Image 1 (cartoon, rainbow, N blue to C red):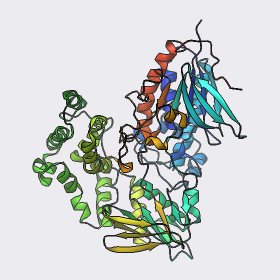
Image 2 (tube, rainbow, N blue to C red):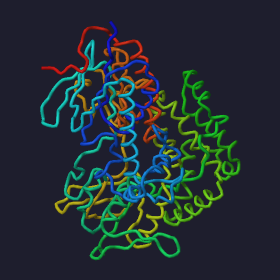
Image 3 (cartoon, helix red, strand yellow):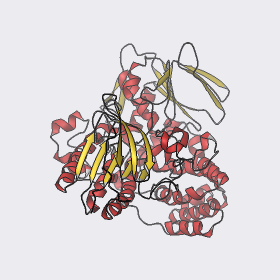
Image 4 (cartoon, rainbow, N blue to C red):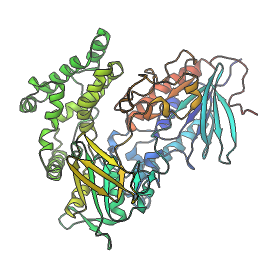
Amino acid sequence: MTMTSSIAFVGAGPTTIYTLHALLNSVTRPFSLTIFEEQSTAGRGTPYRPGWNDPAMLSNIASIEIPPLEQSLIDWLRAQPPSRLVALGVDPDAIGERTFYPRLALGDFFYDQFQALLERAGAQGITVNVRTRCRVVDAASEPDAMRLTIRSRGGELADMRFDHVVLATGHQWPEDPQVRPGYFLSPWPATALAGIAPGKVGIRGTSLSAIDAAVALSVTHGEFKELADGDLGYAPAPGSEAFHMTMMSRKGLLPEADFFAPLPYEPLSICTPEAMEALIAADGLLLEPAFELFRQELIAADPGYAAEIGIAELDLEDFCERYFADRAETDPFVWAETNLAEAQHNYKIEHTVPWRYAILRMHEVLALIVPYLDAEEYRRFSKHFKPVFVDDYATVPHESIKRMLALHRAGKLDVMAIGDDYRIDSHRAEGGAVVEAMGERQAFDAFIEATGQRPLAAKAFPFPSLLQQGIVRDAQPGAQPNASRGIAIDDQFHPVSDDIPADQLFCLSLPFLLGRHPFIQGITSSHEMGLVVAEQLAAAIARGASGGGARDKAEIAA
């Protein structure tokens, strides 16, 4: 007797949405699906939901890069009434495939696509149950099922069993980021920052997470205004004279402006996936030969830039320093203004800077070797190679750079380099924090940690039974906390364990994957992971209920 497979998704953000989309496109048999979401609504995801994000916060992915679901983002935007677009901060007359939109607009897009997918699932004979305000507090592997322990909105605990479970719990941030008076462990939810009084604010980080924090504070204590010359200005609110922000990072650099590049990516000629696979198969040290392929690709792509920085004679560590050297010696706002003008001009004439584009395309290729690096190579990669790739692909919308420049011109924002040897003291009776760095000491009335999601070790995994069973464990036991390589998973996102049946559990929880896949943050990664997991699920469904047995799918334990 053929049995209907049961599947559970834990989390209902973009990763679940893309996985469901891919599954509906490939599945050939009905199955039952339960989706658990801790929030009151499903289908937006933490990075895009109201309250968690300020309406002024922009996404850092252009619409052309967002993989379509039931609709593309552009088609969805064009189908919306102008009143809805205006309410979301979208100019109805400025919709374009290379435009960056507010995070909340993307949240509405994903919500609508989620609803459309649920309708399609029903039409395909798939039973779907979406449970909101419902938290999965534990998960355990059993011989014939995955058991999830659920806390419902009323507080009751119950067990449910499924053939296959996909953990897609997304970023891991505290619900209340203010862990001590005036000291915030993250800039989210943005509503938590609204209570920061106008005063001296320190922000650790200078990337988009830090920009999010600066923007949220800025619109609380003033407003951005379009100037007569088309530039952007900032007008502080009355009574906010004391308001001032200092963003800080090791090098004290702002991110660069998004640059024009052909999409989809053009193929590489030297530093290719095939070349990386050959290195891995050779079973030797990987980082140096991979860097040599990177070097040769960069020389071939942009000989002028390669000669200018002298890459032919640079080792890995020296290349990283040389890559950032000119920016580090220039005032960050002077650099930002020049870089923005260049990026705007290149967009206008559709010109691609060859070296930038080469590095952008190579980051995903170099990521292939990361799971196979030994401890010392991984340390070198993380410290000296990864920052180059992150800087190149984590460029930000032009509007974000304009806002930072406007705040600086208004005397409300500075950027500070703190080097490697700095100290932050947040245990002060008066709140906030004191930063000691580069021989200086600065006190801040409020301080926000805004360095983005960091890799987490197994001890932070939110489902204790999987830890106790030894199914979820560190990829590199005994690693230093700041060098976590995440949990042990394979290329299909199964936990690496002999104690769990194949296809029973998939882990797509971002913080625990970053050690193995250092560049997976973002919507495109959600799409790619979804394709991998959907293929596995569709195959399992086609085989029928794996493991057989007369068990009740989604059985609620007494």
